[in-house]
Image (cartoon, rainbow, N blue to C red; front, side, top):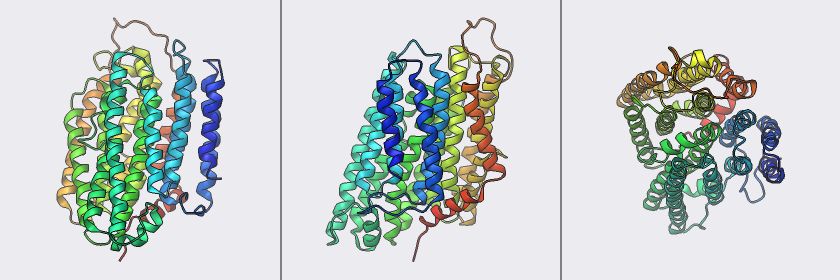
Length: 478
């Protein structure tokens, strides 16, 4: 059954390529996405066993990531039908094909127990997303696409070098060279420390560039700013989750090595705090609201890195935040795309008084801002509070203090951008556009914000148990 999560989107990609009608082709996205979500729900409720050879297995960490990806893609797929109805001047064949191929690749990432196959799946997501960033076919989008390809490809190449170092570390320890996770975990206490350190650094830099950790984030503002809304949502929520899962897999091996775990944890904490600091600086008075969302993504990948580095009580919050970040970014990017279509611009001097001009999209963007800044009663508040409280409980006062300081600065910076956009009166000199809030363009982000609210007020016990199981896999064992 797990293989259907890959084969179903690939079948949909073939069908989307064959369909000649530009208006009917986007319908294939929800037709594939909703059964994929149903299949994911079934897999979460059942116990899976490793495949022959152990290369494929949907463990709790993979289940959490697959759940977030599948829900986010289903939301974006339904939204795409309404959004692309406004974009009939462009062919959407490559867009629909790329989205479905990307879903297949992201699903494969969650199933991989072999680090080499995991690298191939992550690289596939990089290639599949590149043409989607170029959808608008202008000078800025081609620049964003090349910057994305260049930086992420260099990062992926460094990750490949890190995998070679990791395999060589087992060879130096007189073990059979392997990249199979189960075998690496068993042999980790004996593998060479120097080569393990080198592998971790190269893999963190490689996958960190894909994830968008500062200073490896420089492709994000351009790519997020120029990509269509649902592509930006999948970049911020889907591909970030895949890259973070890849880092988690490497981190599992580092934990299993037992000694010098503090080295790996401190590197993650420093990079995470640096990412939050960079986001705090560049988010202040940001006039392009889609670039603002890119820096918000830099902030939240920093939060994930900090939580993973803290370990212990923060691990539950990290995995919960992985879900929350993806869903909340879906609300923000989809509603921001509506604002862009309605106003014909994506800067704060153009977009003003959104609650008056398009109240549904303006209200959703405001709710998304409240949620992503960790305000109750939305679920990001729970995950962020779990991480920062763990820092103080473990005596890492400087980490917790900087965490709160950066959150406060970012909240103020985002407020100065978001509140003038949604409040006040729209400008009278703006040209009229054909966009109006309709069910297919506001329904998906509205349902998503309700899910975020539900998870913040009354999270289901099955999800909490899954998060606890995933956190248990990342605990240091004697």
